[in-house]
Amino acid sequence: MVVTKRTLIKCGCLITMAPGSREASAGNILVEGGKIVDAGPRIDASDAEVIDAGDMIVLPGFVDTHRHTWQTCVRHRCVNIHPPVAYFEEMMFRRGPRYRPEDVWIANYLGALGAIDSGVTTMLDWSQIQNTPEHSDAAVDALRQSGIRGVFGHGWSLTQTGSRTPNSSRPHPADIARLRREQFASDDSLLTLVMAARGPEITDGETWKADLRLARELGIRSSIHMGAFAFNGAKRGIAEMDKYGMLGDDLTFVHCSSSSDDELQMVADNGVTVSLGVNVEMNSPGMGDIPFDRLLARGVRPSLSGDTETLGSADMFTQMRSALAYYRSYVGGGHSREASAPETLTTHDVLQFATVEGARANGLLHKVGTIEPGKSADIIMIRSGDINLMPVIDPVAAIVSGCHPGNVDTVMVEGRVLKKDGRLLGVDLADVRERAKASQDYVLAD
Ligand SMILES: [Zn+2]
Image (cartoon, helix red, strand yellow):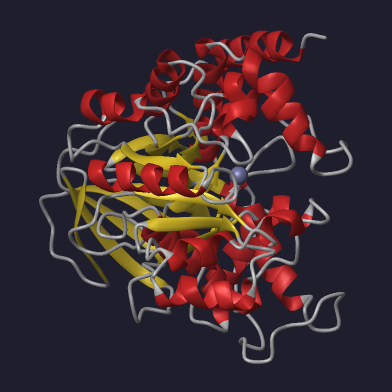
């Protein structure tokens, strides 16, 4: 179902997240050809088809900046695995190498559908399961089939884990250039490509520099895990990149929990964006305190991410609630807040992380993240009359503190309706379940 005609969405409550707009109020959105033509209290469009969203809270779709979607069919596998670093042994060394292209496909399809169902309209798929070129093609195809706005993070092969992890001198797989040419040639596609790069914590000095130069030659952004756990923080990867003048606003660092203060200042000074996988970080003792306060004290506003469903729920409501609770637990909690950081976070701040900052970190703020004329119609509608939300006093607080994916009534990506009346459209769930179970059985055998 595609909104191709002029369509007027009459919103009982509209949250645009546009700069300077902090209020939620009744309003309209005019959509045409997948784009937002106008948004505001009064729009003259008597010729347009009308969508009545009078009992909805309407807002921009959420933007996730880091999800290992290939792990979706083994959801919750590692929740009770201890210590937390055992996740790496299980997924990167034991299970990852046996993935077939079809395992990647169904995991990415299921993961993307779950994201859409929960109101995530843009997701960075941090793939690192590039065992063969066919694995990458399968991952990209599944994102495309789902209808999500996908940012495909091309990583490395897990059949070569030993030679691609600490001090690796193997360059980033050259297949990324083929993908750029074959799958991401068109600028108006819903899909974009980034390098899911290993960076200085994993590769040797010349390799990470060559990898980053390749990404820049290809004209794509890079996302790099940085400072998760003390042993990575001690490597001072951010300082290393700064030393060679390689930091820039085309980079997103994931976690940064054990990165030092001076390194976070380098992040701020160079316009690097940050992705915090809050729920997984809270469930991974030893990763280090989530650096919300240290980032905000330096003017860096983070984006949020679901990280991996093997360790918890990846939906954005979980991330937002966790972020708010974590920040507030600085006061009187087990960790102290940096003195110059804001005393508290508001629900508006957190919603901004989940939309605007996500769009910025994915290099897509010109297209998504807010409801403003000229942007793509990536819009979600939440039923304000549901039993867990009504009667709504503060719509932003209701979304951040009270919502779950079941409250998401309608999801639209570039004007295409992917979920309506609380149900995904055009999806054979029984078939998806069967294929996901078969893949799970294969991947977890012995
Ligand atoms: Zn990750």
